[in-house]
Length: 163
Image 1 (cartoon, rainbow, N blue to C red):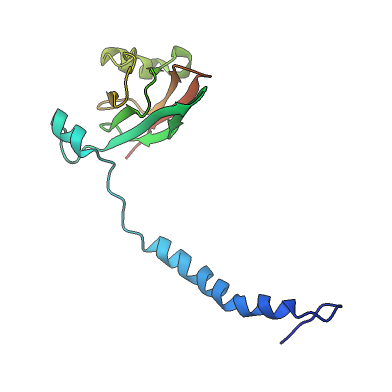
Image 2: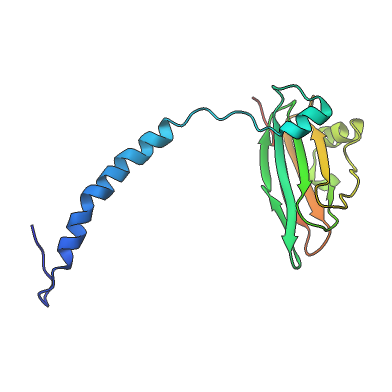
């Protein structure tokens, strides 16, 4: 079927000829997503070897960096399980401070960070510097953090959930 506009052009032919491609894509893409293999826990082989971390302990990574006066925190929101590790890694040459404001934590979450001496981490002062936090035995809930150093502070969350 050929459709034409009032001016006699044949633009409709081009649209109809691409329909089979789009139909095939609509069927194929969901199949590819459904067949995606199960994702392995996050890892960092160098950190694992350096700290003798067991192979079955997931290591999540948060990259800290930025350009000009903006701080970058990627990802800003993480979902982890009790026992997981989270490492903050500096990608630029600026100082970054990760802190957990008391108002962003419930009393049990704050107590956990204090008991494990993770409530006041030291500043990260050079490219490649890492802060590794352990959520072994962590109570479920939200752990709000702020990254300061230059520009406006960036807020993020680590959410500890049931596995």
